[in-house]
Image (cartoon, rainbow, N blue to C red; front, top):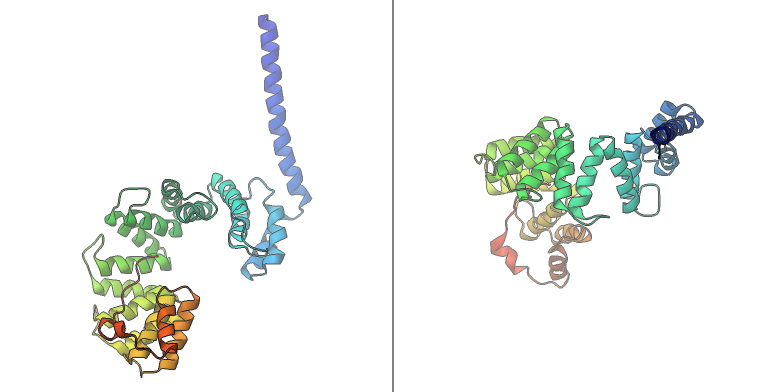
Length: 318
């Protein structure tokens, strides 16, 4: 092959590549043009999503996700597939595809959700290293929920070396950004002495901030501090009050322990019917002991292990 032929072939290859690039750009612009007023379409989709009108939001996000640059639309559509919103059941495979596309465009919410998927093994093979990397990217770029996830990875040594001090720092960053899981987890770190000196007073402070935003685990944990007399005077009446708040928001551990309190008459008047009710609600959520305790009540048997072993323990971080 002569030099001229080689040159011409190289030139043709460059022209072909340039043509493909132009075609790709034009295709995306033409598709966007066919959608009409994209900002208005996006606003409509988001409004349906926020109103929990998922069947109306779904086809709109499907259209928007066809735009190559629509990272957040892809994330929200992925979230709908992940949770099965507006459709018959979740589709983890589709959710994964959309989260990956969104993450490639640097969407930190998508990185956080990918971290959750790889941590839990929902729709993918569980992979702590991948979970850590996605949480790390989201956290480093200011995503508060990813900061919570990264803190938990450090706390347990998942995908990285265990480091309570790093866990504490990431929870604190999330908490200072107003993230309620970060507040609750920071409270647990203070209450347990992980990453910093133990301080029940500081734990109570952060639990109260999270509880003010209706975080059920934080409400439960305040009750646990009252049960133990840590940072506050021991007060089982106040313990029962906080557990009730958490239980009404669906916290299974609060429901179970409230059942114990009604069974024993601690902090409340003894009431076996209420004990059975709370055990039943906790059982519905899969609490491991609630069904057994409920059966004892229904069979009119004593729950002997409660008589001397009643304790309300703190719930660890999310």
